[in-house]
Image 1 (cartoon, rainbow, N blue to C red):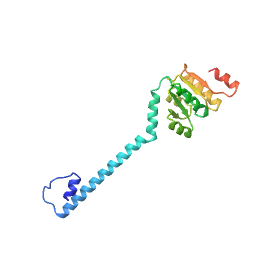
Image 2: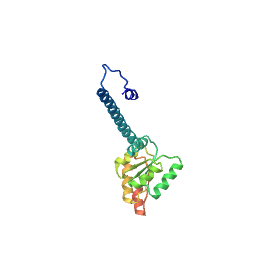
Image 3: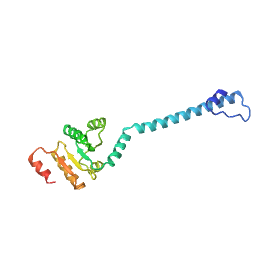
Image 4: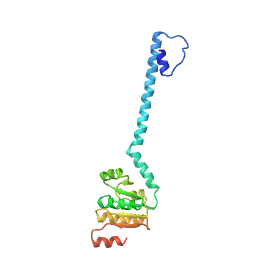
Length: 180
């Protein structure tokens, strides 16, 4: 009894002498209370650390960093060409944000420590999250010329001074893209 009240730091004096049964009850009550507090503390600690370590926390951190960017480039699509362009822009010291819809490519982007947004670059909301209003340039290098044209139109509407580079596969598409 004395060991339990000492180890658990309860350490109170008895108001009136307890019987052996009273001491057993008090010992069990102290141990149960101590175990309950430890279990609740463990649950809170696990919850806290899982939130910190979760991918949501990483995405929030990345979104915050993207929102603070200024005069950066936005790359729509992270295929073979997008990867080469991203590396080249970074070697010149430019900050970039990559918009990619493929979750496997996003895992690679995360491993390579690129700033990225998972989503479809056609969406105004995604372009705004990428900071298109403060960006200096946009590269629409998706395989689909129609998607690149739509991104070009949307980007021009959201930021009229933006430098836009768009991928085209033939002269007709190139002429249409040059109009915007």
